[in-house]
Length: 337
Ligand SMILES: NC(=O)C1=CN([C@@H]2O[C@H](COP(=O)(O)OP(=O)(O)OC[C@H]3O[C@@H](n4cnc5c(N)ncnc54)[C@H](OP(=O)(O)O)[C@@H]3O)[C@@H](O)[C@H]2O)C=CC1
Ligand SMILES: CC[C@](O)(C(C)=O)C(=O)O
Ligand SMILES: [Mg+2]
Ligand SMILES: [Mg+2]
Image: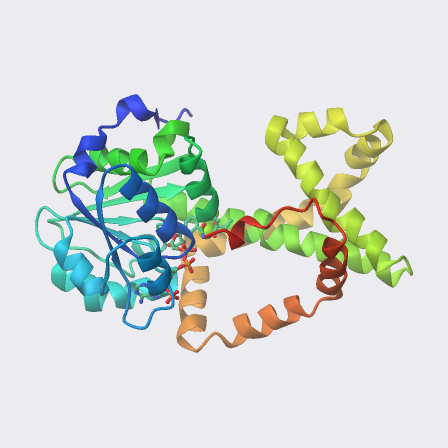
């Protein structure tokens, strides 16, 4: 099945330059969208609650900041980049009362639309521009004249022009320099959640911690275990990123490649694959969304406990010490806003 991909020549920046855009939220994605849109000649206003700790940062970067309700009232296009769990109340209290026919509401992730937590009226466009990378990389790539590929989707096309507007927005943040892939809210939400749970965040973190535990429990030095299970993962992933698994296998030793080919599927075996299917089922059925919304509404008791347990894992202490010895380890991209 082939996907539609749009590039700069397929997008008319003038469409978004003719609109006023409210970016609600000024975190990882919000700062990247707002600054890049502004640098693309778009009239941008930031919506943040009074007392938000992001306010000084946005103001220092020369942006006008008002409340989310005022930003939504002023704007033609409202991009919602607050945390997913805050979006439903934000929508009900500040955005819905300020929607009118002809306006558009945009998202960076489809969670609230996919699971029916936000139901915009039929007279507004509902679209998504979701960069496939962390916000700080989105901004850095834009500033370097490049872009991070993004997904675009239209849930509701009241104006008949929603896709063109979404592509114009994607161009304004550099997305169509790299390519904007057409998808749906459902596909983006379900694959994004699956990817972060099973592979990128949940799967990878558990793999690293478990490998570290096996080596240290067997008496090997934590420092050596850290290098083997975490530090070198970047070198391996960089090779995959550049040329797929094939390039990684080309680059490693034959001994490593034989170990990879003969042992990898003993780790990620049919039980793990079945569990991945189960996780996908929980995402598709809405079970995960209901659980996460309930957890958030209860004050995040499990989230907080698991976060603290993760932070206390011995690999963190070892890593902190070792990274202090590695002058070549760049400042993390999460610290460059
Ligand atoms: N992180 C990423 O790279 C990616 C994120 N996304 C999606 O982008 C969206 C934003 O996520 P992300 O950038 O990570 O969010 P962050 O947590 O980095 O930032 C959230 C921002 O929203 C503000 N905020 C919090 N509550 C409200 C509220 N009630 N009203 C208005 N603003 C509020 C925060 O202010 P304060 O400083 O006061 O807390 C902060 O500025 C989500 O939908 C996410 O799924 C999509 C792709 C990648
Ligand atoms: C992989 C995590 C992510 O989905 C992302 C940066 O794309 C997120 O929600 O932060
Ligand atoms: Mg993602
Ligand atoms: Mg995500």
